[in-house]
Image 1 (tube, helix red, strand yellow):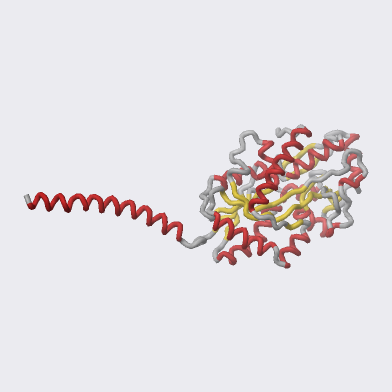
Image 2: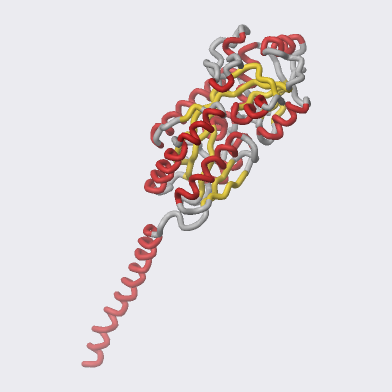
Length: 338
């Protein structure tokens, strides 16, 4: 009897102890995971466009400074396609642990949702914004030996021969594509759109004469204008760019329908939705600190980018307004992807 009582007294606590130990182990693992220092391994910076384009240039500009600031390395991973949609969808499925960054753009995070009926991510719900690099107008450029010396000559030629003039873009649904379609719609002319997989190959074909013109950011087109390989006929901002003061705005071209013409590209840093707020805040603080250094500010300015200091919540509101704006443009201009 004594033996039986003894066993009962020891057996029950043993079961409880094992169960409690299991629960404590799980909780301890969670605590340890949450307490683990971040970052403790390399961070992947996914660029949803090929190397050489605006998003890639800015990613490398930030990453080479952000890595040391965080005490780790940042690896650039280019995954281009479908106006930034392919890489963005990949990033949306990544772990929300601070080890995946995404270079988002007006195309991937404002335009594509109105162009692709089966987009594999939600530009607002799938991501949390970290920092906005700034806004950047696009420039209409032709090769230096092009017969078109100004925008009016190019538009007049397109009116005489509809769809004979070709315009390149970084891909269907990109801001370059939308700018081209909007230009044609407002000036009542028809161009032939030639989509590429990124800005770099597109602008190379403009310089070689394979395509008549292109609308791209000063970030990409600027260096080629400065070295004499491209001629700029107009810029899509309402004011001339300080570093390209001799390039007229498209709005001041005098062409009917183009008064007030404005297209602004923008670049931002995102992380997958659900990333801990502490990590988002640290990324925002460190990134903004870098973007506001005199060296980087001067670089952004030389590339025609108007810097921004919006916080994550303000970026989210700005993004929402951009989604609404481009949805209306796409509907009004009846832009349909083939």
